[in-house]
Length: 377
Image 1 (cartoon, rainbow, N blue to C red):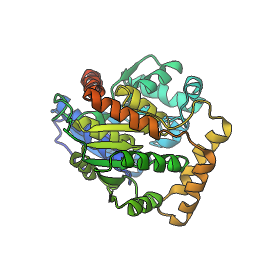
Image 2 (cartoon, rainbow, N blue to C red):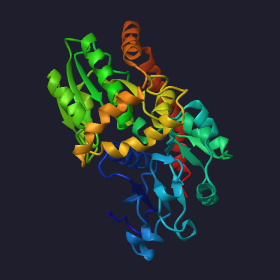
Image 3 (cartoon, helix red, strand yellow):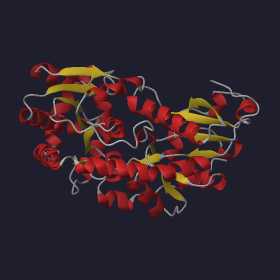
Image 4 (tube, helix red, strand yellow):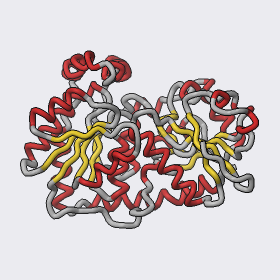
């Protein structure tokens, strides 16, 4: 932990970065944003998934002006369990800078009907008692909060939206798409859908070099798929440094939200398939660069399976991977391959106008992110 001088206001920025590369990106981009708006402050780091009393003495904790959670899908059932920081009235003010929703799969019916339970509402009420706003990383999240009675909401965008070195540059539109990165879904319910999508896209672009990028450990079915087709693979978990892989491609296509956000922030062409409300919010926030991988009419059985299947896709337990593809075939996620290939082809013919719109959305949201940071306690 890095300490600042006594003259500097000190903030404690929390991270949930364990293995998933996206969590490291959120933390690093949030820190840079805070430093750009408040160059006078000192920022220390701690973990968001365990009590702060286990990480430092009370005397040290009291030196901070505020504790900041940078991002991630925190606005979900079990918010209190996601952030077991300790009694909030015994901590410095807690600021939720740019959290997102997490509703599985995130149909319009589900999003409209989502309600926080009493414990989570009490948590949010305590946050707002000592901070100015709840930061929402996308429009879907902002609507969900307002539907739950929270009016002090600011749609800040995700910290990963903001590469301040490239934000005001145009997207990078190549004369021809030669290098493509695929990111597989986290949820095995979409594995067969992803295989169909990747194979159709590759068949439509036979002159492309293709790399499958893993964000949280190697996903065995897609490693095998890459070997079968002669594609490359990269594994970037454990830090934000691996995101540089997307600087080397002309286009990203896949399911990893922060691959999409990073690529788009850098001006690289990118299209996302949404696995749940995290992806739905990212697509809406950046102007429609992608589509949902689920059907709005999916009922209770699908929703139960979507919630439970990810535990069987843990790379630490590779023997269970054999269940993933059969399970995804049984669930029969919609075939999105033709729609996605057609979307990319249509955008290519028009000069990728939606990517220019995405950058405009980022620029417009930056002022609210800066406002959120400027009002830190």
